[in-house]
Length: 503
Image 1 (cartoon, one colour):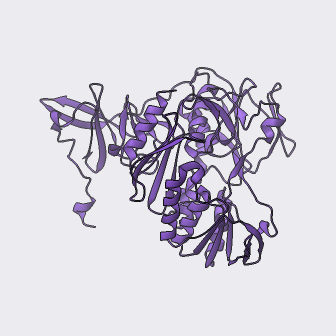
Image 2 (cartoon, helix red, strand yellow; image 1 turned 45 degrees about the horizontal axis):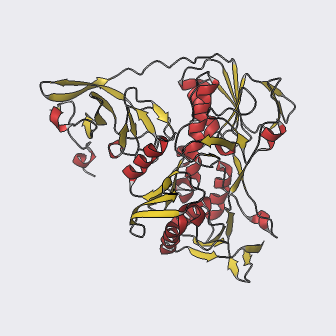
Image 3 (cartoon, rainbow, N blue to C red; image 1 turned 90 degrees about the horizontal axis):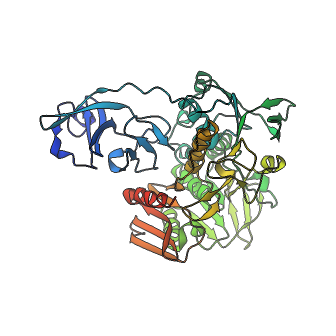
């Protein structure tokens, strides 16, 4: 690549642009020196922030402005235009901000603004304990420190590794296109620097909600003033002869084990056409491994996406060489032979089970919290026991968008609920109002999904699904509950805004 090609694109904002080139509500990408900058005019004010999302580097100019925020087109992170703060996950790090001046009919972007001082928490509980080392638990701990909580923060995780970017485990990292140092959400030093006491390989066996005490498997006790349960979910394992030979994929250790075996594997069988199963199939195809997918349904992902997108996902994988064995199941695994219920035998050097997960509710149930298909929480993420909160895969909350109490197993939802729980544990009254969002990557095709529709009576398709350019709306009684989209980023963002207006 030449030096010219490496230079930032767009106008030099330090030299200024004509004021008329930036209309109200518009954004423009340019640069100051070698730094790419997003310039925006909103509500009669001018803002200049770094041009790319701090999550996966999405171009913010392709996103949308909502109030005094900009939303990333790829995975819907929200940033404050005033401070740069990443106010809604999956981004956690802030954008840098610059000063802007309008004079003599031109707009100039000047030097960097100083980072604002952390906000101080309203209440002052001395001890906050987080049970769980996944998305919700980490996001809560990060938000506590970001917003100036000065008390003790303890994270208790039964994992042997610190919090990781779990979506990467079934995508780029598993495919071999992302190094392992991309996987941790923060480096090991971050926890000490932020005075977060992260205890790994730690099993919690009981909670005394009245005595404000946690019992550990080693006999120890941890006291708390506020508690967040973020115990997540665990993979479902089917029981059949030889099932113990099948890998599941949930943790970094799981992923490392699959990668180690994949190095010498030529053929793999994936049990289950779930999101994890199919993303794993795509990752293994990137490693040039022959992949067979066995699943009982007629078409993959139909329960979530409907028949049209289900057929598209199947064809996309078949184009990349995946062989499906649908309306079938595994009877047994014996060494390198996988026997199916229909009598067929598949050779496999690697077997992976991806048939869904179940929420880890035992601890909450034992503690006497109200359980109904999940831990029941209010809009502030607080459980039936005052001072005890729940977030992520275990939480079942009142969703005003659908008008129902729901529980979802989405990474972004878990992070955002952890953030909201953190604010409320510090004494704010911040309701959880985000529209549920997830993305699924299959080869070079991302599918974004906003909202939540467990059932629908109508599917409306705009565009062409098979041509990878569409918005799919899921409706009940003419009311949109969710949309899925392929390469329609702005429509996906705008759908999220429309849904959140109901909340």
